[in-house]
Image 1 (spheres, rainbow, N blue to C red):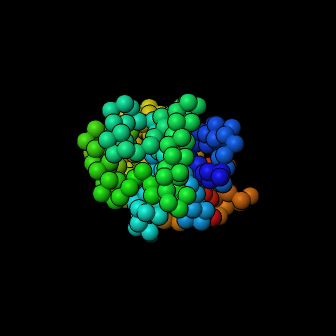
Image 2 (image 1 turned 60 degrees about the vertical axis):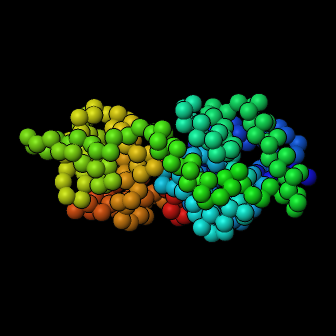
Image 3 (image 1 turned 90 degrees about the vertical axis):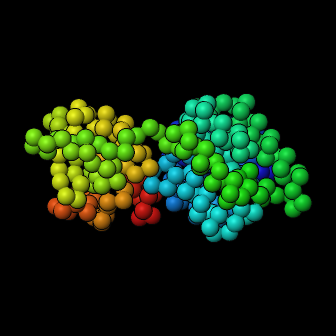
Length: 271
């Protein structure tokens, strides 16, 4: 009996690489792919696959948030087998080992992918129903234990300062990341806006600033702009099937979405 699988990863190349490795196996059928957590929840509930290859780090709704939503909706016994895809270092990976969770490190290794599939096959054979229901996540308590261990290692997400330093006039201000609406670069100056103020970052490029930001909150909508997903007030249709984002800062700033990121926008908000 063929194993049915879903691939959830926000990196297109990673999805394609994993699909190639899985489809080299005669008994594996990839039913669908998703590039964000919102779509992942819908696909898992619709297809009820045997196994889900789930990226841990995705903007908006990460892999752990996907599992929380699934647990809320039906309990651990209804979950498929979950195999995490992660770029975490060896110390963070120990948290997965302790909780008997399957994981794959990026970049993917064919031998390791086949080992993970072998474990799924074994669980299917051991299951009275002949399905892979009953995830290695096991219970909500087990998931919570995993999250606690990841927090202890500081690896539940990339290292990111909780505050960002901004210069406003002669003042150096510390701003919480969650309060940042967006950041923009113009002629070598990186400007950061919150609901109540604007200031300049000491970072020389937007790429440099993004390295400090939480990837679960921030999305680069345009080469010159990065936005906080939680501060988007409105998606505004623009000319030639493009969009702008109206933010909730005091100026109700409108941020362009590049053509390359339009598809990502549609995926994030189901447009």
